[in-house]
Image 1 (tube, one colour):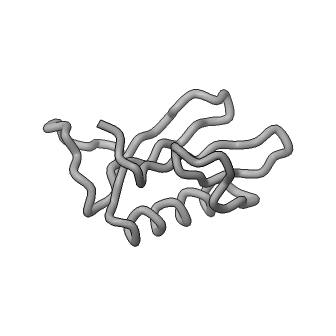
Image 2 (cartoon, rainbow, N blue to C red):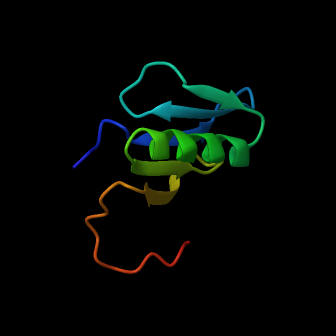
Length: 82
C-alpha cells in the first residue's frame, strides 16, 4: 500500500537529479548528484514519519527501494542492500 510520504529520486534529461513525492507534480528538491538527492529524500522521509524511497537508475528503471524509518516495511525478508 502506498504511503502519502513515499518519494522517488530520478535523473532528468538535463542532468539534474530530482527528489519528489510520488503524488506531487513538481520536484521537492533538485541536485547535481544522485547521492545528494537520495540524502535529502531520506531526511525528508525521516522528518515526515517515514515511507518508501524508490531510486531510478540512468536507464529509468527502479534500481532500489528502501523503507525509511519509522515507516512500516511489510516484507519479512532481510534487506541485503543496506
